[in-house]
Image (cartoon, rainbow, N blue to C red; front, side, top):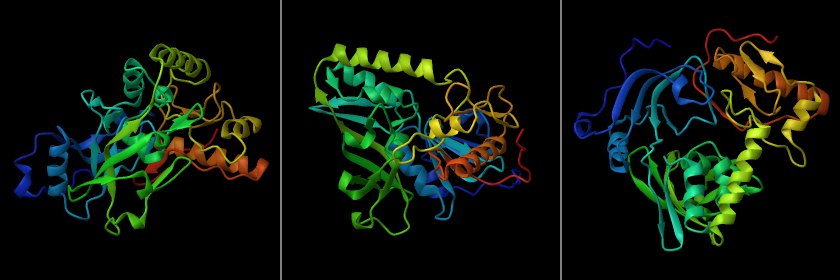
Length: 322
């Protein structure tokens, strides 16, 4: 990718109303939790929802567009992103109790909703403290842990399409499964028109706030004890196959500590790939993902499916396994 090429021009009709932060030729390493990857032709961090809608209206219909929260489930290839990355995470993103439901902006961190619900003496949100991403990302992939999943608590969501138009959607509008969420054709969506989550309403159960806080502490202690949280990682790399665990399959192949360039299968948790020295390229990580997948298929006859999203352009070369 030639990053010296000019970015696609913004539509002058709306560009002068934008209040967010627009940057060009941006390294995405600081925006993904693996701390590696290529450059984005352009990034935009909207000031708020209205500003996001205005920005989307400036984009041509063929502009490659990606929404990123905390980048905790994402690998951007070293060849980069030939379009716009919309950066959604904001520390000021709203979470509020409205009657018996919680509204959460897509840019809010999932642990923030867990803590807020516990403070209001609701139970059922505690698992979100273990999801290292934003509400938007959790909605997009039905994130979960400790036996719970995001969409078990969702009552309604709001989305935006690339024309800047907002939509209210019900759970019935989506095909929802294990780490999978897709808008149904029956939802009256425009065919071929992408939509991204900008927020949602969640229902939890009124209960014991102290019990909820205790559960959060317990699960966070468990995460620290069993996951390599001190090293750059993207959480679980592979989905658990039916009736089994990806980590068990990978460990049984003797792959803990296996490396590809600067990337390594964690010695602490086999379904984590870490960047221990900060020197791994996205190509190293993708190489290691394929090496692990091939080994598990050869020894167990099971094809592991990735939980992380891999996007962007392939570079000219890839790393080699060691």
